[in-house]
Amino acid sequence: MRRRSGLSARLKLTLSYAGFLAVAGALLLTVVWVFLLRYVPDNSRGLLGIAPNRYLLVRTFAPAAAASLAFLLVFGLLGGWILAGRMLAPLTRITAAARLAGSGSLSHRIRMTDRQDEFRELSDAFDSMLEQLESHVAEQQRFAANASHELRTPLAISRTLLDVARKDPARDRDELIERLYTVNTRAIGLTEALLLLSRGDREDFTREGVDLSLLAEEAAETLLPLAERRRITLGVTGGAARTDGCEELLLRMVTNLVQNAVVHNLPADGTVTVHTETRGGTSVLRIENTGPRLPPDLVPTLTEPFRRGTDRVRTDEHAGVGLGLAIVHSIVRAHGGTLDLVPRPDGGLLVTVRLPGTP
Image 1 (cartoon, rainbow, N blue to C red):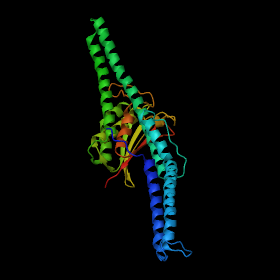
Image 2: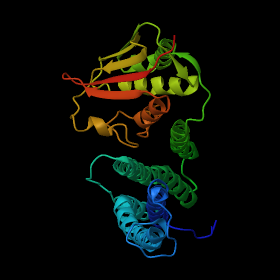
Image 3: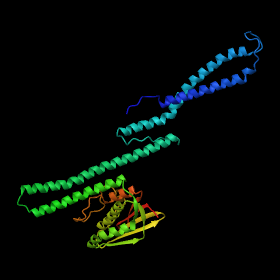
Image 4: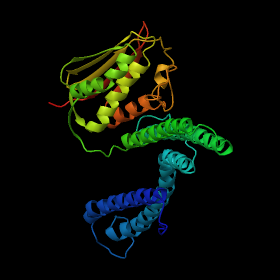
């Protein structure tokens, strides 16, 4: 939308300074006139005498007053222009940075080093916003590239299987159908995970009272057969931990964490402990599992999409697409909570989710 061009802020400030100075000068001269000249006797009007009189003083005072006002106006305009330019210089830097950001360059920073004032606060807030935007855009680009790669893989496998079937009509169709079914299931699972991750980032869900302890029991009951097949001891402890949020998303969060704890629990005969509690007005979910040792520098990257901490034993049920912890992180962030991942000294991982509690 195009708007009519108006006066710049620098010009407005300049006119304001000059106008204020001119008005102040006029008031000062008025005070001089009212409180000084009115006490001078008005005798011998039109005559030139030695004794001071109002006529002579007015004729002498008026030109000097006019010259003083003109000088104050010019001085106010010049001084106001210089002062306004110095005061608005930080705003010019912020505007230039905003234009660079608008053109797609998010790496530029203002980094103002002046003393703390309103412009310094605006500059710091703008730099922080640019840093978050750059990080978010980079994450989205990396996510899009990984998602494209992950989605292309099952489609390429399906095409290869179909080409083989077309060139070899005598090939066992049952085997072909089974392999296509497996590949298609993986593609559907990946698509659903991407949609769920996008939904968690939008934060457009309806909130209701949820007890994390009940969700933990439900997730453990669902994944108990998987744990038993892997000879993993799965236990749930603790008490009620209520919070406000979407029950479906929070259940998916707990299920993903418990499933990761079971699947990554290698070798077999390990343990997974799920604990819930309320501490200081915060609902806490803690999941701890045994397993291989994780390098400390690897743990912070586990919440990135398509990152896997260790090699998994693949199964048809839980092939995994590397989005489990990314979805968890998205859901926790959408509910105003925090997610902490700490490697255990003896191997395995300790995951702690903290969400705002409710009575």
